[in-house]
Amino acid sequence: MPERTPLNVKLNPFDHLKRDLSGNLLRLVDLEVTGLENLAGFQNIPLILNIVPHESHGDSMAVRRALPQRRKLVFLAKKEYWDGWKRPFGELTNALILIPTAKGTSPLSAFRTAVACLSQGYSIGIAPEGTRTLGVPIDDRKFEEGIGSLLRMTDFAYPLVPVLLKGFDNVWSKGHRPIPFERGGVLFQRKHVYVHFGTPKFYQKDDFSKRENLVEDFRQYCIREYHAQFGASE
Image (cartoon, rainbow, N blue to C red; front, top):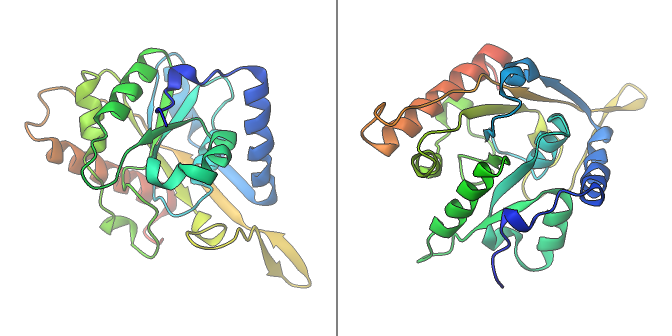
């Protein structure tokens, strides 16, 4: 199947309606969004949004719902996960750039598509950990090197933004059905979840000679932002 590029993702009113309807699933939880003021000076600048920690099937849906609707957004996603019967669901909830991740494949073409997408004004959502992971403290989470590659391919023109999530592992974790409610007294209460947009961070070409050092610097930056927002506990 040919890879669907973001230039073929037409954000017409019907597409917005589909994604708004799917995003309404998050009305079942108590979603608190903070940090939008950190993006106030970047209305006309595409952003590379980094979802941390990545623990839930609903993470990308939450980010799309939390962002103002005027911002165009697509997500980098693993082809092996979203292909086949899952593809229509993925396209319903998110515009996807599929990255080949099977052994022996290269994500280079998907990154080129992402670069073209950024140049056309789309923001990119990415999970720098590469996969959903449960039970790992925020300080011990590891980032893959893809964000460093993406920055280099864009000549460092776009900022990296920490998008910090909390509580989603208790709502729709990997391998489980969504459970948006919890028992409180004699009634069921909506679970409280958080999306926080951290301060965008620009890097320059000469900041780090090695890609892995840049990625580690940003990982530490996300950890500091997480602790500043949510405290030391998970």
